[in-house]
Image (cartoon, rainbow, N blue to C red; front, side, top):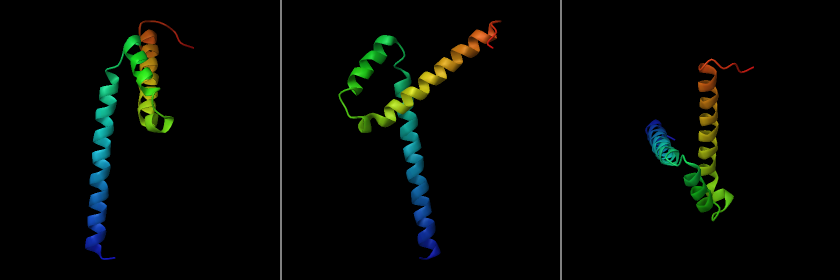
Length: 85
């Protein structure tokens, strides 16, 4: 394989990865807007209509966002003079 075709393949792969990262970031931003209990319940209902494989990426994003929110809440509590130990 020639260097020019390897470079082209590498550029194509990098461009594809960037496109996928941008799409993933947009999806995560959109999912972050579902914050209230009612909104999350509605979203969970929609997701339950699809297979685990179809919703794997969405559920992973939602799980990560939930963990980040919980960690943020703990940090805020500790920052207000609370002691976590």
